[in-house]
Image (tube, rainbow, N blue to C red; front, side, top):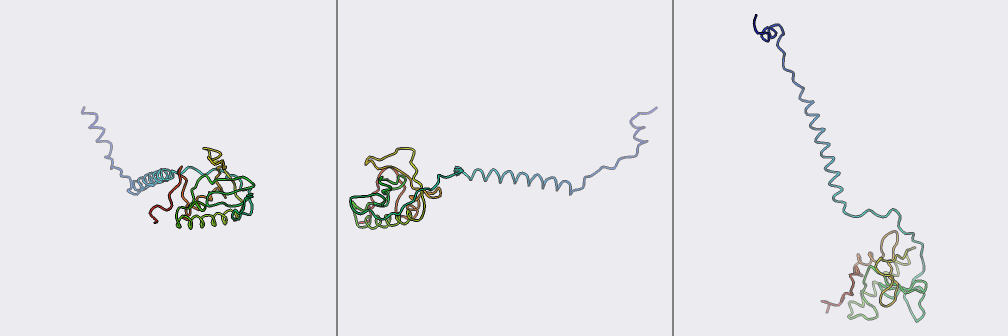
Length: 182
């Protein structure tokens, strides 16, 4: 009697090796690559979005009035300059910007830019309803003006003046608008 394995192999016909069709492997790897690409794209998009989400609801813009340039000693609702207004008898300093001075301008450039900022602020305030938002830091400045950001549709009107080159973002001190201007 011989080796059992050899006898068995003689009785069973040899198997042909089975090969998977190449298209199945291609489909598998293409699907895997697509999944990895999708996950990478999602992760990349989240990394680019460093900005905090917008609040679900912005404060309602319920305030409105007709603003003009302040003139005379009695001031109820008017614009003093590019960053100071009177609204319903309260003097308000726009908290998020610094605009060139009109009353105490140090040079003609500052006076001209201050007048343009003042005119533009009048137009912006009269363009529709707005809201006054108190900054978190303080309620009033050292001159006892109320500190407020003027908002419309969730956007600061001060930012509009900054983008138009008529003011700068408030950094805690006044800028010398005349420096380097002669």
